[in-house]
Length: 345
Image (cartoon, rainbow, N blue to C red):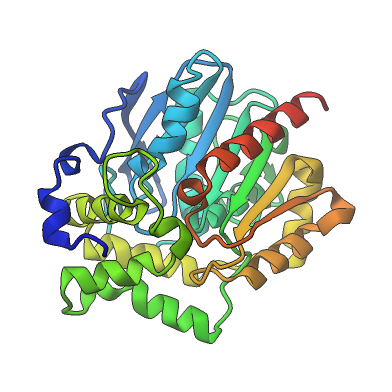
């Protein structure tokens, strides 16, 4: 039986569920001047290597949710990789302005952090976005928003986007070009806003865990501390929800708005593939993902141009929404393989 919330809190491994990974650099960047700001985005850089990885987090999650990848790339291979992790507006240590959030505005926030770091060289950025983060990544290079850009951005008919030759590779994980109003999606929204509905903590956790594959949840904890992976997953979710400053209702709801209004047409995504290079783009999705269902990945793949454009697609059989957890080693291998591939281009 899975541990209850009370049992997780009493477990000796609980205090260390967020790993103490010390960053090479950390700080806050004031962004969105003239766009409703300024307000601060909190970031960390782990590692000091020449390969710059940008990890863009999804809905309602904090930058430390990337801790497995931060360790795998920014610590275990610190001389090879530099990893940028940050809290999107509305979450964690970043500010939580009350305003309409859109994925395009959050993309601009990301660009300003990158420019602050000086990560502006040609083919420098390996960008990985999961769920809402994958939507933000699409906006970073789609060129469909108005923005009076500074530094190394490009203007075209009063539209702006990240210079495409700054992108070395794009990895789009468990994400969508737009969210379709299917029954599954309606259920998804209902579950994602469960923090607003009076329920026991155990019931809320069960709903969140329903988006992870059962085979992974009930397997022994890969880190050999909790009884199962699901218990560790629960411990991290509890930690997030107990962070009353970092995880707030208003920030969460503002981020939800950004996901439901996100939409990228076939024409727009075809331009993304052309600008970046289709052979530099990969899509990953779990076949059992019931948060952003598999047909969304197929739409994204086709709108980018599919096989004809050189897009790589990996479908994980028997896996759900949280691939960086459920398939940590294979996820790492695919990221590394794409980096090696594009370096040879």
